[in-house]
Length: 457
Ligand SMILES: Cc1cc2nc3c(=O)[nH]c(=O)nc-3n(C[C@H](O)[C@H](O)[C@H](O)COP(=O)(O)O)c2cc1C
Image (cartoon, rainbow, N blue to C red; front, side):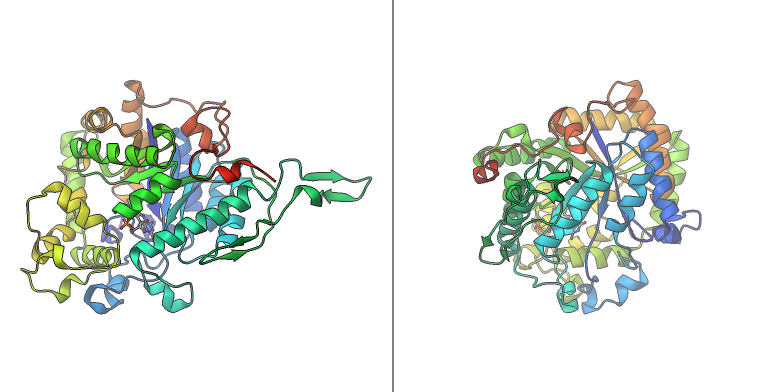
């Protein structure tokens, strides 16, 4: 099983309101490197696959048509840049992977390629990129890039992938750096080439600025949930980050993803599936209950509404209670509406329903969370693995800091006892890609959609 821990470089990840817990150090720790280095060390001591950083650009300003609620409830603001945390966390670890969110809407592809090559060098091949097209439009106001309509963002994302993959895979030969001191030649220019990309959205000449890194292309994660998002994942992703409603429904969704992967000319197992889930563990039932009571009492409903309205691109405060959500069109994420349809396809969900659900989202209901004693949570994880066919989990640890300790000190030993999780990193799996796909597979396989990338010249 693959296990990631999900986080955000903000005071209260990932459930709004937890900054009010005075015992949680994340509220100031998020902006201190020591917080992140300690977290990385802890995760490595438990043999976790990777630390996953979600991230947004801009501010949540959809709910009530204002950005004030985001500030009041610390909804991914204030924040620091996760890319800058990774070198420090990598310096104190050897095996832990790092998956980081980076937007195709708000960064140029040339910059993306350079940043991820740098991180792949610094981590010695432990980096993954969570490709997002960004649901928040507000960063456009800061000059970061045009926030296109939902599907167009993915179309542009497809072209973005062509550019970055060409820079990573085609621009430099492995033996381009000759470092010939006698001849005075560092790089042989005949082994480096321009990519000469001219497309609808991008014109990028190249060459790439970085020499090839251990993985060349970072491990590609993707989390789009809409029809167009799933096609994008099927085309590009090596790891799909899913939020499936339940194991049974998850199986159907996963079959759909695998069908799309095959349609793209790729092997069905070319994509690993990780289920994102909140987890809360206590040594005993009573301890878990006490943790849950405190946690739930701190959930900020206004904060949740702020986040979900931003996510969906719908201001739920602007509609009457009985308005059917199915009739509201938006250019934000289609994820929540799809999720509701999967919970109950027959139901005509109204704005009031969504407001209520979003205030304490379905995944944060104890019934849907991975919640309870280590044995109970491990049972539930086994059920997920068996019934849905997922490859592992991206865990939202609750509460943010002590929740990580509970996962590492209580849950993982139980998973190890059952033989479900590694007790040591495999020394043959040098890079993060090899941890997912096996020793010797540090580089992207050339398959299906982009055969042209197979030829280096
Ligand atoms: C589980 C999950 C996690 C996501 N994490 C982020 C994130 O950290 N930052 C971001 O900008 N978008 C994030 N997204 C948004 C998606 O990448 C995508 O841009 C958005 O959901 C719209 O596409 P969709 O309608 O296909 O879901 C996430 C989506 C899902 C489903």
